[in-house]
Image (cartoon, rainbow, N blue to C red; front, side):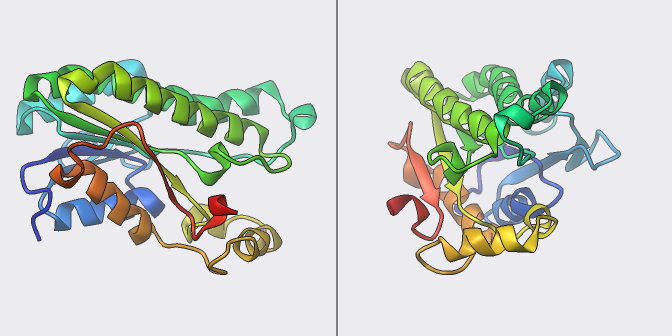
Length: 236
Protein backbone atom coordinates (compact mmCIF):
# COMPACT_ATOMS: atom_id res chain seq x y z
CA UNK A 1 0.00 0.00 0.00
CA UNK A 2 1.55 3.30 -1.05
CA UNK A 3 -1.14 5.93 -1.56
CA UNK A 4 0.95 8.36 0.52
CA UNK A 5 4.42 7.15 -0.42
CA UNK A 6 5.91 10.61 -1.02
CA UNK A 7 4.23 12.42 1.87
CA UNK A 8 5.67 13.92 5.04
CA UNK A 9 2.96 14.30 7.68
CA UNK A 10 2.41 15.61 11.19
CA UNK A 11 -0.61 14.34 13.14
CA UNK A 12 -1.46 16.04 16.42
CA UNK A 13 -3.16 14.09 19.16
CA UNK A 14 -1.37 11.14 17.63
CA UNK A 15 -0.94 9.19 20.83
CA UNK A 16 -4.39 7.64 21.06
CA UNK A 17 -7.87 7.41 19.60
CA UNK A 18 -8.54 8.99 16.21
CA UNK A 19 -5.03 10.44 16.01
CA UNK A 20 -3.35 7.09 16.59
CA UNK A 21 -5.60 5.53 13.97
CA UNK A 22 -4.59 8.18 11.43
CA UNK A 23 -0.91 7.76 12.24
CA UNK A 24 -1.14 3.99 11.80
CA UNK A 25 -2.93 4.21 8.47
CA UNK A 26 -0.70 6.99 7.10
CA UNK A 27 2.36 4.89 7.86
CA UNK A 28 0.74 1.84 6.31
CA UNK A 29 0.15 3.89 3.18
CA UNK A 30 3.83 4.89 3.03
CA UNK A 31 3.90 8.38 4.54
CA UNK A 32 6.66 9.51 6.85
CA UNK A 33 4.38 10.35 9.77
CA UNK A 34 5.30 12.19 12.94
CA UNK A 35 2.86 11.65 15.78
CA UNK A 36 2.70 14.67 18.09
CA UNK A 37 1.00 14.53 21.48
CA UNK A 38 1.22 15.95 24.99
CA UNK A 39 1.45 12.38 26.29
CA UNK A 40 4.85 11.79 24.66
CA UNK A 41 7.98 12.51 26.66
CA UNK A 42 10.45 12.97 23.81
CA UNK A 43 10.93 15.64 21.15
CA UNK A 44 12.84 13.55 18.64
CA UNK A 45 12.10 10.63 16.33
CA UNK A 46 8.65 9.74 15.03
CA UNK A 47 6.85 10.48 18.28
CA UNK A 48 7.20 14.00 19.63
CA UNK A 49 5.91 15.92 22.59
CA UNK A 50 3.76 18.87 21.53
CA UNK A 51 1.46 21.20 23.39
CA UNK A 52 -0.62 22.53 20.49
CA UNK A 53 -1.26 25.80 22.35
CA UNK A 54 2.48 26.62 22.37
CA UNK A 55 3.34 28.67 19.27
CA UNK A 56 7.12 28.40 19.61
CA UNK A 57 6.88 24.61 20.05
CA UNK A 58 4.89 24.39 16.83
CA UNK A 59 7.50 26.29 14.83
CA UNK A 60 10.30 24.21 16.36
CA UNK A 61 8.52 20.96 15.47
CA UNK A 62 7.91 21.95 11.85
CA UNK A 63 11.46 23.21 11.50
CA UNK A 64 12.88 19.94 12.82
CA UNK A 65 10.63 17.77 10.65
CA UNK A 66 11.46 19.81 7.55
CA UNK A 67 15.18 19.59 8.26
CA UNK A 68 15.09 15.83 8.86
CA UNK A 69 12.60 14.71 6.21
CA UNK A 70 11.92 17.54 3.78
CA UNK A 71 9.03 19.98 3.29
CA UNK A 72 5.83 19.13 5.10
CA UNK A 73 3.16 17.60 2.86
CA UNK A 74 0.30 16.99 5.28
CA UNK A 75 -0.85 18.49 8.56
CA UNK A 76 -3.63 16.81 10.52
CA UNK A 77 -4.95 19.05 13.29
CA UNK A 78 -6.55 16.33 15.36
CA UNK A 79 -5.68 17.19 18.98
CA UNK A 80 -8.83 18.03 20.85
CA UNK A 81 -10.61 18.09 24.16
CA UNK A 82 -14.24 18.27 25.24
CA UNK A 83 -16.53 19.57 27.96
CA UNK A 84 -20.25 19.19 28.53
CA UNK A 85 -21.28 22.35 30.37
CA UNK A 86 -23.95 24.80 29.15
CA UNK A 87 -22.88 28.43 28.81
CA UNK A 88 -24.30 29.62 32.14
CA UNK A 89 -22.42 26.91 34.05
CA UNK A 90 -19.16 27.17 32.13
CA UNK A 91 -16.17 28.63 33.98
CA UNK A 92 -13.94 30.94 31.99
CA UNK A 93 -10.95 28.70 32.68
CA UNK A 94 -12.77 25.68 31.22
CA UNK A 95 -13.85 27.71 28.17
CA UNK A 96 -10.23 28.76 27.64
CA UNK A 97 -8.94 25.21 28.06
CA UNK A 98 -11.25 23.79 25.41
CA UNK A 99 -11.03 26.66 22.94
CA UNK A 100 -7.25 26.88 23.25
CA UNK A 101 -6.72 23.24 22.32
CA UNK A 102 -9.42 22.90 19.66
CA UNK A 103 -9.37 26.32 17.99
CA UNK A 104 -6.10 28.04 18.89
CA UNK A 105 -4.18 24.82 18.33
CA UNK A 106 -5.61 24.51 14.83
CA UNK A 107 -4.66 28.08 13.96
CA UNK A 108 -1.13 27.70 15.29
CA UNK A 109 -0.62 24.44 13.42
CA UNK A 110 -1.61 26.01 10.12
CA UNK A 111 0.48 29.12 10.77
CA UNK A 112 3.58 27.07 11.53
CA UNK A 113 3.12 24.65 8.63
CA UNK A 114 2.42 26.97 5.69
CA UNK A 115 6.06 28.09 5.18
CA UNK A 116 7.26 24.48 4.93
CA UNK A 117 4.42 23.55 2.57
CA UNK A 118 5.35 26.52 0.40
CA UNK A 119 8.87 25.14 0.12
CA UNK A 120 7.38 21.92 -1.22
CA UNK A 121 4.97 23.87 -3.47
CA UNK A 122 2.02 21.83 -2.20
CA UNK A 123 0.27 20.75 0.95
CA UNK A 124 -2.84 19.26 2.51
CA UNK A 125 -4.26 20.58 5.78
CA UNK A 126 -6.83 18.29 7.40
CA UNK A 127 -8.69 19.70 10.37
CA UNK A 128 -10.70 17.35 12.57
CA UNK A 129 -13.90 19.13 13.55
CA UNK A 130 -17.03 17.27 14.73
CA UNK A 131 -20.62 16.62 13.77
CA UNK A 132 -21.34 19.02 16.63
CA UNK A 133 -19.40 21.73 14.84
CA UNK A 134 -22.29 21.74 12.39
CA UNK A 135 -25.28 20.67 14.50
CA UNK A 136 -26.41 22.10 17.83
CA UNK A 137 -27.17 19.99 20.88
CA UNK A 138 -27.81 21.12 24.46
CA UNK A 139 -24.76 22.00 26.56
CA UNK A 140 -21.35 21.24 24.97
CA UNK A 141 -21.03 25.02 24.61
CA UNK A 142 -17.27 25.49 24.37
CA UNK A 143 -16.76 22.29 22.40
CA UNK A 144 -19.40 23.23 19.84
CA UNK A 145 -18.13 26.77 19.50
CA UNK A 146 -14.54 25.67 19.01
CA UNK A 147 -15.39 22.93 16.51
CA UNK A 148 -17.58 25.33 14.52
CA UNK A 149 -14.63 27.74 14.47
CA UNK A 150 -12.46 24.97 13.04
CA UNK A 151 -14.84 24.82 10.06
CA UNK A 152 -14.48 28.56 9.53
CA UNK A 153 -10.70 28.36 9.75
CA UNK A 154 -10.75 25.52 7.22
CA UNK A 155 -12.80 27.45 4.67
CA UNK A 156 -10.61 30.51 5.09
CA UNK A 157 -7.39 28.54 4.63
CA UNK A 158 -8.85 26.77 1.60
CA UNK A 159 -9.46 29.95 -0.36
CA UNK A 160 -6.41 31.79 0.99
CA UNK A 161 -3.86 29.18 -0.10
CA UNK A 162 -5.59 27.47 -3.05
CA UNK A 163 -3.49 29.31 -5.63
CA UNK A 164 -0.36 27.94 -3.93
CA UNK A 165 -1.60 24.34 -4.26
CA UNK A 166 -2.12 24.12 -0.51
CA UNK A 167 -5.49 22.57 0.27
CA UNK A 168 -7.53 22.65 3.47
CA UNK A 169 -10.41 20.34 4.32
CA UNK A 170 -12.29 19.30 7.44
CA UNK A 171 -13.51 15.92 8.65
CA UNK A 172 -16.59 15.85 10.89
CA UNK A 173 -16.55 12.63 12.93
CA UNK A 174 -19.68 11.26 14.49
CA UNK A 175 -19.56 9.12 17.61
CA UNK A 176 -16.24 7.26 17.46
CA UNK A 177 -15.11 4.52 19.82
CA UNK A 178 -12.02 6.03 21.47
CA UNK A 179 -10.57 6.28 24.98
CA UNK A 180 -12.14 9.75 25.26
CA UNK A 181 -15.66 8.56 24.46
CA UNK A 182 -15.13 5.47 26.62
CA UNK A 183 -14.55 7.79 29.59
CA UNK A 184 -17.90 9.54 29.04
CA UNK A 185 -21.15 8.65 30.75
CA UNK A 186 -22.51 5.41 29.27
CA UNK A 187 -26.01 6.85 28.91
CA UNK A 188 -24.68 9.81 26.93
CA UNK A 189 -22.82 7.48 24.58
CA UNK A 190 -25.93 5.37 24.10
CA UNK A 191 -27.92 8.50 23.28
CA UNK A 192 -25.44 9.56 20.58
CA UNK A 193 -25.31 6.08 19.04
CA UNK A 194 -29.10 5.70 19.13
CA UNK A 195 -29.47 9.03 17.28
CA UNK A 196 -27.14 7.82 14.50
CA UNK A 197 -29.09 6.45 11.52
CA UNK A 198 -26.70 3.52 11.12
CA UNK A 199 -27.37 2.67 14.79
CA UNK A 200 -23.72 2.16 15.64
CA UNK A 201 -20.60 4.15 16.33
CA UNK A 202 -17.53 4.42 14.15
CA UNK A 203 -13.90 3.50 14.68
CA UNK A 204 -10.68 5.51 14.36
CA UNK A 205 -10.05 3.56 11.15
CA UNK A 206 -13.15 5.16 9.60
CA UNK A 207 -11.70 8.62 10.17
CA UNK A 208 -8.23 7.49 9.08
CA UNK A 209 -9.59 6.27 5.74
CA UNK A 210 -11.12 9.70 5.08
CA UNK A 211 -7.87 11.39 6.09
CA UNK A 212 -5.86 9.21 3.68
CA UNK A 213 -8.08 10.36 0.83
CA UNK A 214 -7.73 14.04 1.74
CA UNK A 215 -3.97 13.73 2.28
CA UNK A 216 -3.25 12.04 -1.03
CA UNK A 217 -3.16 13.04 -4.68
CA UNK A 218 -6.57 11.44 -5.28
CA UNK A 219 -8.08 14.60 -3.75
CA UNK A 220 -5.82 17.05 -5.62
CA UNK A 221 -8.81 19.14 -6.77
CA UNK A 222 -10.62 19.03 -3.42
CA UNK A 223 -10.38 21.94 -1.01
CA UNK A 224 -12.71 23.65 1.43
CA UNK A 225 -14.99 20.66 2.02
CA UNK A 226 -16.56 19.48 5.26
CA UNK A 227 -16.63 15.68 5.13
CA UNK A 228 -18.97 14.00 7.62
CA UNK A 229 -17.94 10.53 8.77
CA UNK A 230 -20.88 10.08 11.09
CA UNK A 231 -23.11 7.19 10.11
CA UNK A 232 -25.64 9.58 8.62
CA UNK A 233 -26.11 11.83 11.65
CA UNK A 234 -25.87 15.12 9.75
CA UNK A 235 -28.11 13.88 6.93
CA UNK A 236 -31.12 13.89 9.26
